[in-house]
Image (cartoon, rainbow, N blue to C red; front, side):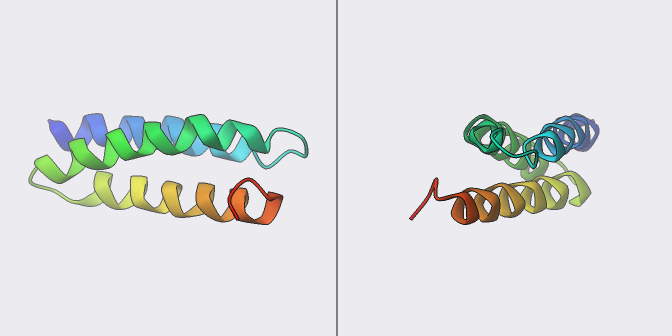
Length: 73
């Protein structure tokens, strides 16, 4: 059950991350990354690891986008 919750959180965060790729919306990654961290924590508690892995991918994509945009030096 926790894996399903983690997958849902990961999919929502991924959809928001896609929107954050639009120029001038990169600041949204500051909201997406904590959401994906919560999903990764929930996913790591469950038995299956697919939700955790999805959230980790969203975190990496968000951090890379922030680095490219100058949000993280």
